[in-house]
Image 1 (spheres, rainbow, N blue to C red):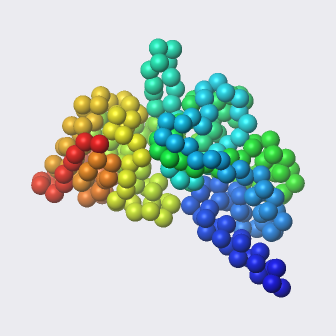
Image 2: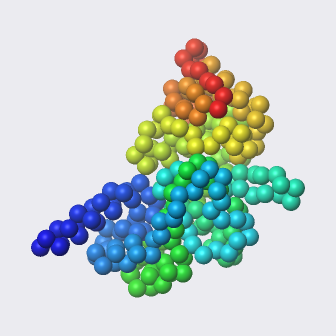
Image 3: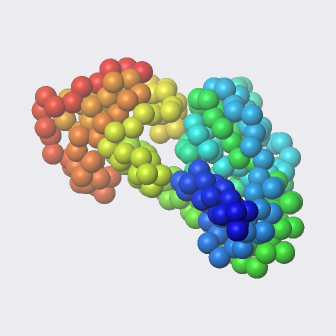
Length: 258
């Protein structure tokens, strides 16, 4: 009886630690028996934390595993022959990384830490083997991967053919939604990336990004101090992302460069 109670406490602690992760439905499906949960937990490898600038994997590298961000953040990027970097995605806690390498067996992009970041590594071969033994696991895996890929494609589609103001509004609302899904504040958060990295991702000049932050603050839509952001008018920003315009609230916000 004591052993059973101890196992229940351990399982509850694991669920608590992983509740915000997009892999939680995979690693800890509700219907799984305790031995199956243990089998899944045994193949998950907790890597040594990455420091800012550390590379998780490089473009062209062999695909061996998928990764889940536990804390911190990553960026995915491609690098041209002359060394120019193009950021293609940001990955926040609870999100998957490396899915785009499954089809061809090599990573098409490089993943790099934006700040101190801890990662869960799930060897894909072992995960496939385990999926053959646990009913429903393969279907859940495909569902989770499909959701992550769709989210990235939806973001790229939303940014296409938009004004600079709309692009920044779309990104801020996207970050707000992603933080909110993980139980964090939807209106007050810290950006893990620099303004320069934001401008690279949105396809804007750094000077344009600085002007946009000042304009958003002057209009009362946000308050920004370095990387600390407060969305003062999230509904107005959402209206802007849908092609409308946000109401101006002069003199509310303030902005300073990161």
